[in-house]
Length: 290
Image 1 (cartoon, rainbow, N blue to C red):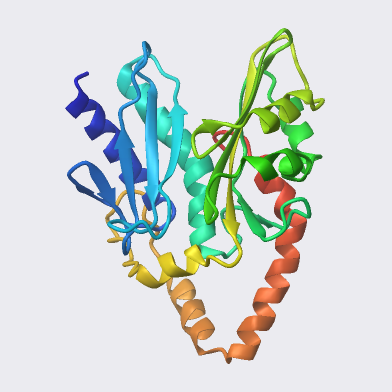
Image 2: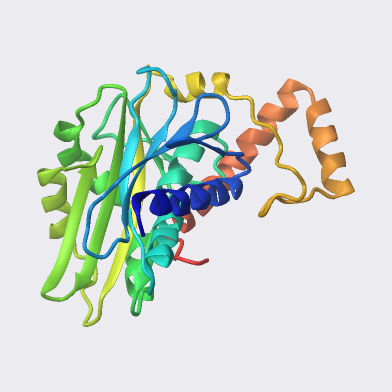
C-alpha cells in the first residue's frame, strides 16, 4: 500500500472507533477532527511488516495549551490493511479510552487513581488489553495488582511535561524471551521499565502480552476542563455505523435526569463513585475483544 492508501485505512478506522465512544470525528486532510478542538493526527511509522502506526490525540488543535498525546501501536493480520485496522482498534481500546475518560471524567471508560508517590498528579488509567496464548494467567495477575502504584516511584523522575504525560506499559512474551517497556510521551523510561521487568508477572511457555495506557495530569493544570469547554459534541446520526439508537425509556430517563435538582445529581454521582471503586479492577484487566 502507498502512504495515501495507508492513511485512508487508518483514518477510517479512527472515525469508526471513536464513534463507539459517542464522539463524532470526520476527515480533514492529514488529521481526523473531533468535537471542539480535539483531533487525531497520524504519523508514518516505517517498519518491515507495515502494521505499525503512530497516532496522536490532540486536545487543543491549533494551540500549545496541551501536549499531543502520541502513541505507537501495532496490529495483527494477514494483510497490511488488516494489520493497520487492528492497530487502530488496539489504540482505541487502551489509549483512546484513557483520553476519553480524562475528558469526560464519568468513570465509564477507565479508572481515576491517586498515587501517593506522585503528589500533585492525578492518574487516569484505561482498560488493559491482554492478548496471546493462555492469557487468563496474565489477566488474573493484572487484576490482583495496583500496577501504577508499584511503578509510581520510578516514574516520578521520568515525567518530562509539567502539565500532562501519556504513559504506556507493554510487557509479556514468554519465559526467556520477554519484553517490559514503559514509555512516557513515546520515549522509553529506563527506571520504570526496569521496575516493571522486576515484577513477578507470569512468564509462560507461549507468547502473551499486556498493553495499557495511563494519563498523568497535573492537578492544577485543568487541561481536561479546558478541552471540555471547547467541545460541542453533537449526537451521531441514527444511521451512523456503531451509533446507538435511544429507546423512549432512555429518552425519558435523560429528561428526568436533566430535571433533577443539583443536590440530587451530586448524591447520585457519589453513589456511582462508590460502585465504580468496586469495579475498578475489572477495567484494568479487560481482555481483548471483550
